[in-house]
Image 1: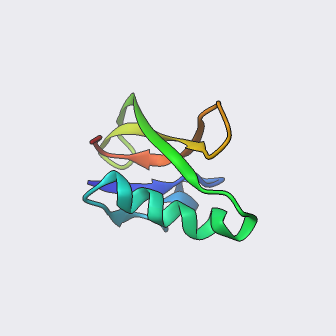
Image 2: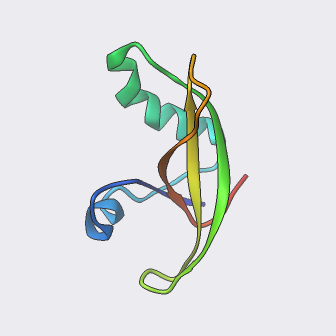
Length: 82
């Protein structure tokens, strides 16, 4: 499955595309950023958004919940879900 980080523009976001095989790979990628702040991703879930004809992805929001938090925020987008 393809994953990309949420960024300001589609072009910026597409520069971060990577292939992932598990939720743990996404968590590990995100934690490289959050660990600098003493945080970590506790949970990942997906929300179907629809077809993005600009890049030919059936797109899902990849939502993250950080350790100690209750709300989910958008970490990025994917072209599938686990």
